[in-house]
Amino acid sequence: MIVLKVDMLVKPGTEEECKRIIRILQENSRKESGCVQYVGHQSTENPRKFLFYEVYKDDAALEAHRAAPYFKEHVHGGLDRIMESRTRELFRAVE
Image (cartoon, rainbow, N blue to C red; front, side, top):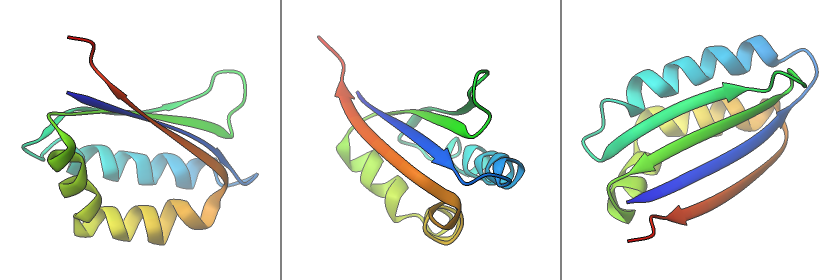
């Protein structure tokens, strides 16, 4: 099991656009066979801050997610243009 945590800060005024894109990504990602969980969150303290919490069966499932056409369209063509900053961290379950 692999977990990806993504923290994002979006440009002022793009919060609704970010939520729209998150909804599209959630709908599509949750259909992937290797996706265990995929949830986008918005900060209650700063509405420009967002978090993705993603769980995949393995590295191959994460790579398949990143290669999906909708990912390229809505991350590279959507979120990337409204983000001020982003950090990513990968975690593995302790067995």
